[in-house]
Image (cartoon, one colour):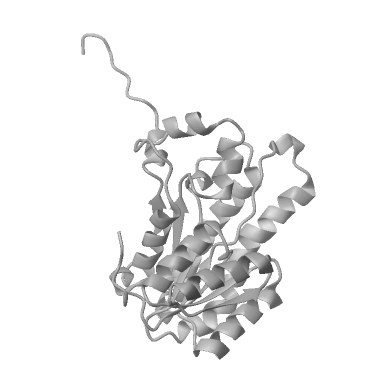
Length: 267
């Protein structure tokens, strides 16, 4: 699916973790829909390559090296967006960290690292972007990338699951507080997205691909374009009345994990 080339025309967006994976998938969709972009990430080389590709598509995009664990770093990204493009309409809090380790073996530092990136980083993005989003003539959009595993538990990834559950609660609170300012806050909860490093590491490299696919009713991993399409919808005029929602894009996985139907003989 493709949106019109002016679906996000005139809008300025920041995407953290925008140099690869889901973040870069959203970036490409945003450029194709007419948005101006600021990509933020710790990896300068990856950012440079991503921006070059977006510019080759005819898009306006710049890169700012930043660490979402540092509030002043996030503030600098927002300031750069406003100074370069004249404002900010969309903030996509996508930067995330995760790795598999059982809770009983998880070090305090491992826990803190993921919480800092995922949960604290999302709040920093929201807080730093708030003044500019409030001034958006389109109605500001704040979107955090969550996961369907946030509310069902995530064995092996307790830190990431807890952080993402916290993000969902944060978004609901911000919706109640910032709706009066015209800011629409939502989360997008991807399932297993096949063309990302996370799925390769957590499922494929660990020999769990077949098991994971068996839990997805549609029978296949998603694509970054699936998440990007949801983001374009939420940030366009079509999503103007959507706030406080958790848009699940997982091929039905959260339903596939439900208890199976039990057939009683003779009934």
